[in-house]
Image (spheres, rainbow, N blue to C red):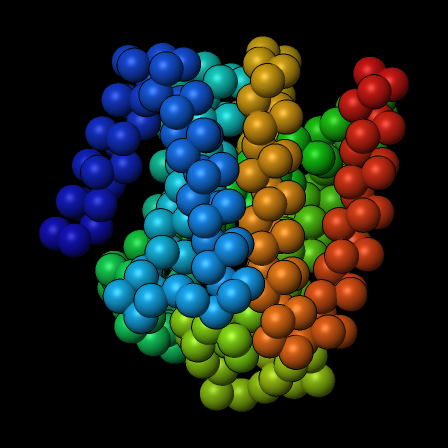
Length: 275
């Protein structure tokens, strides 16, 4: 019943966004920027009240909603909403399997500090995955759009998976060591996070990319403004977690992901400009 209620909730949100059009979408984007700015200041000076620890879950949920709007604006309500819902529900389901059976990502469990849960998985996780896939989709599509069909498909899947892993290289260390949103019980060389976590991220993201290619292949993107906005959301999320990593003493992760972000960012800007 919890899953059914969640599906109804997701569908209601996206239908409302479609019916209300640009007005609600624009204000959600503005609200996200305000929330990001306030959170950045509060976290920078370590003045976030304990009662507002749920704020990061809201931040990721907002980011995911904007990722869903990106797909909706680019490919229409039917395809955009369907794909967004699939990413949310599928990612939560895989995370549930991971938590319950210690499979796919590794041995871990979530704490109570990351907001409401569905089957042992925080509600915000599905939206976080949607944000990641929206950013990965936009970047990989822009970088590779000049390639032939078969080469494009192969690299679209691989690059999307690598982009997802690159953002998890900062999300996971911060969530584990700085914010204690989840706990790894069997670690590895990278901040005690097992390699299976990153391989699991790559495989799941690559699968979502494959489905996106199949689902959206014949539909050219329609909305230039939301192409930019989703990059703002994707980048600002990374910037926030990079900053948290720096404040938490995770300098290696902060430097690594900053370098990767600058690399894909510069290439993306060039390819977008040339197109």
